[in-house]
Amino acid sequence: MNPFKAFLFLVLNLILFTTINAQSNTVPEVKGWYFRAVSGYPISVTFEPVVLFKNGTYLEATEAPLEEINFSESKKNDANLWGTWKRNDDLFTLTNHEGKSREYNLDSGNWFPAFPFDRSITLKGTYEKISGGNFGNGLYSLFKSEIVFLDSSHFTQAKESGITSYGSSAWKNSKDSGTYSIDKNTITFTYNDGRTMRLSFAIGAEGDNVINTDMIFIGGKTYVIE
Image (cartoon, rainbow, N blue to C red; front, side, top):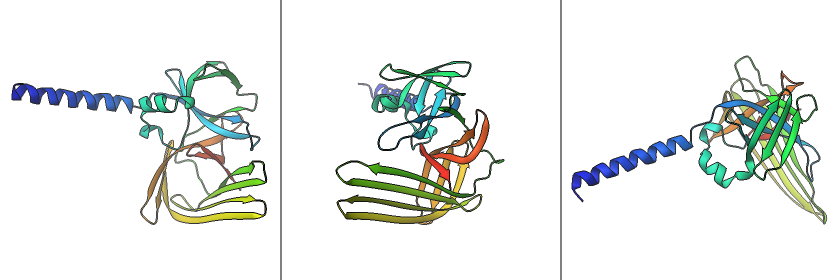
């Protein structure tokens, strides 16, 4: 092949690859964040945040902020997190990737709006997330994550996890601290040891449209104030 044509071919393919990759990482326009009540063993009731996009799809929020998700890869590798949604007044119908639909109503107590952070909101105090339970055969597990927002930019974090079985137990504890910043639905933790972690973020609601900072969602997980 002519050297010039070979070079041109390489450049065009690079441009095409860059364009496709950029498109796959483009965040679809968001209609709103919500959270729903879910049930399951061993925890009876918990909450999970859901992002509704204007194109009629939804995504169960995970650890990663939206701007860091490769949507093409996510739809292929994490299809169970995706589905479609429709709204009729206060009734929301979500259909998962298997075609199973479930209805949620803003007046039913199982579906609430979630809010992004803005500078009028103050986070201060201790938030915790506890999970685990009895898994049968004498096996119990516990995981507790505690985040203390000291002020508008500093935090401490403690984690405790353990397993007990037939009188024996194993526990692990860790403590960290550093600074944090929140930009709408993304929270960034910068630890004193130099690590940085960016996670999805949302704030809960009381009723159908009132911000309630007693419940927040970090990395797709529910934290409640002590």
